[in-house]
Length: 306
Ligand code: UDP
Ligand code: MG
Image 1 (cartoon, rainbow, N blue to C red):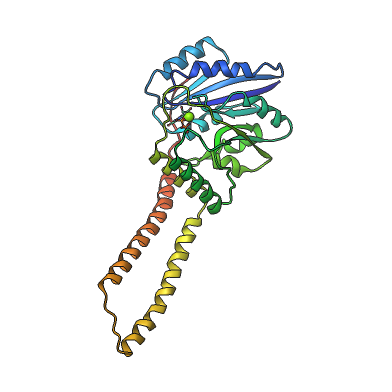
Image 2: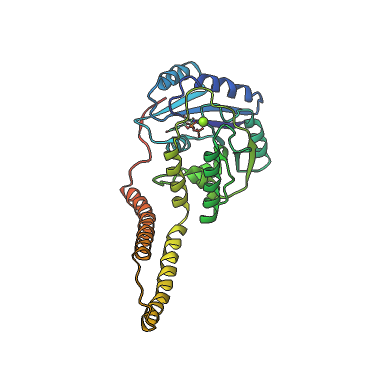
């Protein structure tokens, strides 16, 4: 019998949990699979933990891990992966935006020999505004250009992972882990399936614009050092160009057209000032990563589990 474990990160989802459990239950009618659901409470400030405690005491298929504070969704997923002993792991959101009906299809594709089955949003989130959709498109373009990963636009944290891949990810101790990229990076036979996200059931999204930008920067710097190369090339190009400027100034002086011009000077100073700060910032991002990683702090702290 195939053991399937569903890992659900929970951050203030008190109203969604029990409905999600029911929906998942409906997806497992086949006798050949045995399922468990592991909830990871990521520092909820509402009644989520109480709800989880009650439900797990009533239902043997459920278990929970509770963090000491909010560590982020990826940390929550990693905690679930670290604990898992199933043949197949499925990660999905608690807010029912990831349609549970897809589980059947995912398991079917797994049986056909795929080690990873991931879902991606088919039509770029309709509810999301124009700016949100544009920035998401830019992120995936940049990500694919800058790293060797090819992430589909709209790829979600809704995926099935075979035990063999789970065993590879488990020992990884990356400080700010970006699972969407990491699972893709691992390789093996992977397949994507499109889905249309449902509306969030209750509560509100925990991801603000600022958080999304940070997530994008984190994703890119986790998988690529190309921004550093770009910085070096940019610097090199501009110094080469500035060398051409010296004979130009010199010759015009000899020909009796000395250069004056405060405006052009200021523009140049401001431009290069900005460029230097940007490049320093890029270097700083990587340095910061190195710094955080060198501390070797755990990715999450478990307060209690059952
Ligand atoms: N989540 C989490 N920790 C966080 C933020 C979110 O575990 O710090 C969970 C949340 O409970 C949900 C999933 O991650 O199950 C997706 O979050 P959300 O719906 O807020 O994100 P969105 O769907 O807007 O991308
Ligand atoms: Mg959501």
